[in-house]
Image (tube, rainbow, N blue to C red; front, top):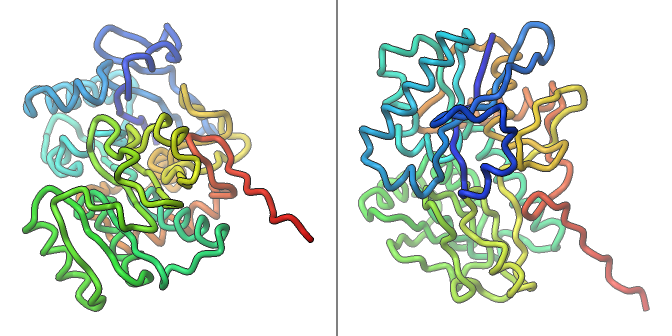
Length: 327
């Protein structure tokens, strides 16, 4: 089974870390990488930034994504595509993609394992900081999105109070109805995160979203968005804020599938999911809303192949907390 990630640049400077041989005018694609003599993978994408992608007419962007997928299918026998970055958003969670007859293979946004990893990173961070979720308020930015909805279903029942944030009030109300077993939930179309102890960001915003004024003292921010919703600059100015990457896992030894710009030995959870799907020879599409049963299944498959969240990271740098001084 041959697979390919299909993403885009996050920022214009990212082109500098892409091997020159991978750049083919408006497309980027690597040579095929043999994982185990049965599975071959490829890193590909559009040669445009997240901001450019979101700024172009929807039909035009979708056409570019489909053209690249068909090229990969016809020239490299790719039969499994992972929608990376904001390509999921502009294809309606991938649902538009699978309706196109030109691509004959399977599509996966990879967000099931990403959502699972985000939840695990959140709980792990709170355990590390010795904080109990039932004492805390959580805010989920992008709450009714593909990742946000799954994260809300898993984490909201564990917290004292929850703030669901999104652009459309009716979508927030629909999500709240799905979470009605938990009474302490509020919804808002404003970026109301100042009172939150924990903030999960899962948006399709093409630039940084949170500023210092949005953050409570000692806030925990689990940032799953790509590009990140909380910038490195804000983190530097607010050392009290505990930022955690929501979507990185450790790449098993022996799998030489290194994404340019990602620290050696790390991989995005969404990419890990498509690698696992190819290894399992799972010939299905996973698009649209996340099925929690499938989400939990990705965690089991991850253990089988050795994808792990063995450390928390901030901008892919391992987080180390000094133990308290003994008196």
